[in-house]
Amino acid sequence: MNKPTKTPIMLSAIMSPGAGQFLQRRWIAGSIYLTAFLLCMIVLLVEIIRPMVANIIISIDFAAHVSDQPLVQYRVIHILAWFGLALAVYLAGLLDTWTAYTRQCREWSRQHSRLGEIPKGY
Image (cartoon, rainbow, N blue to C red; front, side, top):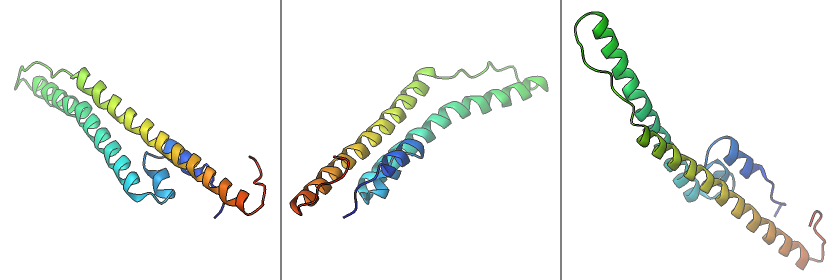
């Protein structure tokens, strides 16, 4: 067993939640975090883009003197809620990757201390 690296933590922090778990060969956890994060981000984008497109259509109709509907308002509470949930999933995935990394380090340290080797960096 090689000494664990911090690469999975960096992947989870930079790319997306679940990437680090995939590198650690924890397929189910990686799938759950990636799916949950992507779902939150998709719903967040829909909450932002749908009123924007509706307002553009209303503005075009108004310019053509076809409609006089009021502009659609953003639901800020929904946007903040989905953003908060996405952030929570992101942080949970990062914490999960870090916890698995520390567990792997302890395991690696135990294996090498039983063999009579002194692990470097500990």
